[in-house]
Length: 113
Length: 113
Image (cartoon, rainbow over all chains, first blue to last red):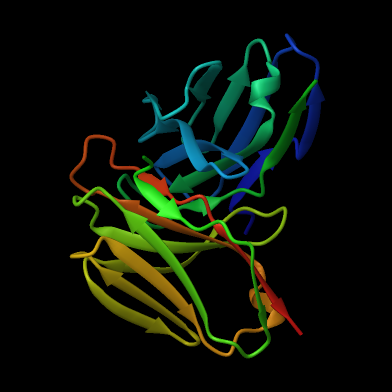
């Protein structure tokens, strides 16, 4: 039972490079989320997808795009990475929105130099 | 001012101590209150949740909500070194348009053997 799987676990990018963070869940959850976690800032919502085929902006969407590829997969893309995007990124899923029962992945540690 | 305020610590206690972790919030529409535990380099996992005001107990853990004061607490009795982690409070307004979780910044707890 994998839960929420994120790839890659670690990444170093140069300023201006692009990359896609992948997330997949095997719990048949409808809703999926992308958060970033920075020291002293807690978890901040970047984008979410309440159901397959829909996406919405969260608190800090600038510089990011998302794709809900199907019910299982929700990817986060950085088109032109900036040092301010250095962070730990977490994907999460839940059966519905609203929900208390978020299941988080183990995170992607991204450094932009 | 953040919607949810949480003392970041770090908090260090001896094994067996009673630990009190707290959050304050400003949005009176919050109805669900949660505590997540996050081990180092892992994703957060749901520890406990309560709906509206009151107490909830689960083993060594007790969650308390005082909506009149906009204050929530998590108590850990007989703390163990395995409780060493960052504890995040989270809240949601089920009637809001976004209906997402709002997280505190987390309190880092170390229980010394």
